[in-house]
Image (cartoon, rainbow, N blue to C red):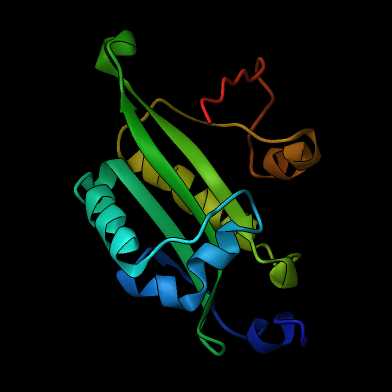
Amino acid sequence: MENSNSSIEGNNLRVRKLELSDKSKGFLELLRQLTVCDSVSDKEFEDRFKEISMYGDDHVICVIEDEISGKIIASGSVFIEKKFIRKCGKVGHIEDVVVDAGSRGMQLGKKIVGFLADHARSMGCYKVILDCSDGNKVFYEKCEFKKKEIQMVKYFV
């Protein structure tokens, strides 16, 4: 399979919000490169898309599309948590950042993270946070994040 780098290197790739039609452009397949992502019917995708859309700017999923192949090659999301601390402040939570294996090394992840962090700032957040593996620590440091504390998790499934 041809590396998709060659088809998009010259393009001015832009980050945009997820659209309903992105399911057919490989959005779920891209997420499978990150974590478990079971098959989702068109109806389930549409229902979840509409549900997330109801949150407006408080939950944003963004993508980068390779306009030549028509495939989604990068994605990430941010949701805004409203708090009582810090004068009823807000915190942005970045999640699910992924770049297609064939499109890595082109600064797309940095574009996605920058878009999401800028969105959180524009929403009045006093900080934006994320969890990552040790293997991704250097990448996020290049995106101006710094290590703070540790992550804990409890899975229910």
